[in-house]
Structures are given as structure tokens and as C-alpha cells.
Length: 246
Image (cartoon, rainbow, N blue to C red; front, side, top):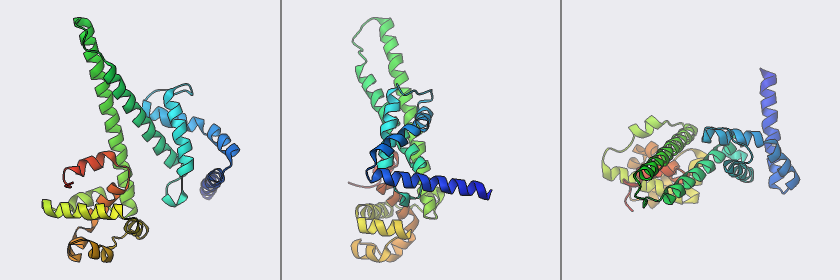
């Protein structure tokens, strides 16, 4: 068991060291590293496409670009491993690509043909694309919820706690969302929250027209909403958009 843990730790350190060298400008190492992890890229892309992916597929190219992006953006301070971060980024970019392609196919369908057989074939094609689009949306929504759950865990919170501590009155909920948005858009406040895993209550008292008692009472909900505003949560942001006035 100890030997296994040692090997895992050594592998992680080796990856981090390699990525750091690449980020410092070692292009040869970058090319070798990407070549070595092509099977990993293909596996990540295949899990989204639900079919075998080869290097000739457009989706693989998207995954390759995303893996390179992950190398350039990765920081060990974020808590996740390089491969976890890369897998997430690859899947996100491939899903975005598929969604864009689906939209383009939908726009290219011509319904001007009056032939009944052709017309119904095109309707079926459109429905098929829409169903696939819905499945992609569902997959991405699940991914966001999983990422949100992982973030909440880092703050000692759970999804159920956020739901249960949601302010009951609309005005109170809007005020809590406004506070969350203020924190997300203020680098100093956001840094304090992410580093200390606590709301910067004293600083907030000077900015918002809400009492300390109210901030403390809605603490868990405010933290949860701040995480949503701070990260790339497309679907979760849409969900709360109707509650927060422009």
C-alpha cells in the first residue's frame, strides 16, 4: 500500500515538474508530452462522443488543442491534478464543438422542398439533431453540478445545505445574490473567500446595505452563489438569472 502511494505521489510530482518546464518554454518537451498522452486525449473525447475516436476525427483535434490549453493554464494551487483538469477541459471543449456543429446542421436544413417524403425525412433529421443537442445539454449540466459539488466540498458545504439555506423571501434572496455577485466581481474579496474559505464579513459590511446578522444568516447560500458567479457555470448561471434583477 505504501509503495503504491509513493508511486502515485512520484507520478504527480513528475507531471507537475514536466508541466512547469513546459510553461517555462520547453517546446520539445511539450511536443513529446502531448504525443505521449494522445491515448488519454482520445479516451476523454470518446467518452463524450460515445464512439471510438481516431486522430483523424475533428473531435480529436479539438481534444488535442484543449489538452495543450490545459498544460498552459494548469496550476497545482487549484487542488486538482493535471489529468483531472485536462480531462474536464477536453470534455468541455468537445461538447462546445458538438453543440456548435449541431446548430450549424440545423441551420442548413432546407424545408422549402414540397416533396412529402423529403419533407418528413428533414423533419426527422431536425428532431434527431435536437435530441442529440438535448443529450449534450444534459451531459454538460451534469458536469457542472459535479464540479459545483466538488467546489462546495472544499468549503465544507453540500448542495443540500445551499438549497436548505436559500432565503425564503424573494427580496432576501435577491440581496444575497447581489452580495455574491459583488464578491465574485471584486478580486480582493474573492481572493479572501477562496483562500480562507470564509466570507469577508467585515469588508462586506462597509460595501453592502445589509446587516452583519443578515449576511451571517445567509452565509452558506452567499458562498454557494459566489462560486457559481466566479466559475464557468453556464447552466447554473442561467438557473439563477431570473431571480437576480439586472
